[in-house]
Image 1 (tube, helix red, strand yellow):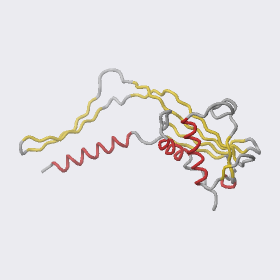
Image 2: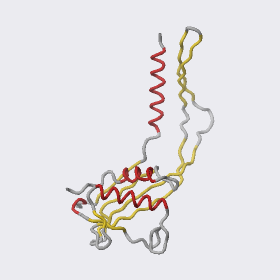
Image 3: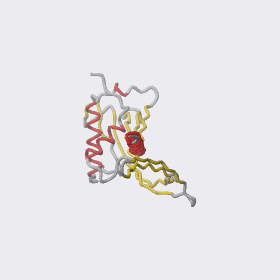
Length: 188
């Protein structure tokens, strides 16, 4: 009987499709010659016109991002202070539209039976007309660490595609953890 082989092909096809979306893209850069683990404390970068500046209300999303960054830094052994921190942390989000070409090739997998016979099939198709283009919104989260003594950025991490204004605190925590994945822990 060929049913187990066909079912296996269907399972593999669906598993491949589930992985196609993938996680958000993450990158980070540390300034040459900087030992981030040598810094002990952090505070927040004063923001002249950003949310959270004196007099400007902190949005729910910004508060969730700030809390998630704080949790990541504390977990890594850094201590938050109000005055004279070793690092000043700031973040920003930017939403933009991206155009993606739709994949014109279609693959189909089918399994069926009639009476006692079992059959399966695989098909492909390529459209004859012009390729489709879809637009989508992506959001980039950037987290920056600045040495206030030299007024230079010493680390920046970005994650693209995984956060939006409707994100709950749990989703924000995952994106911030991904963004800060390569931020080093302090020796304990």
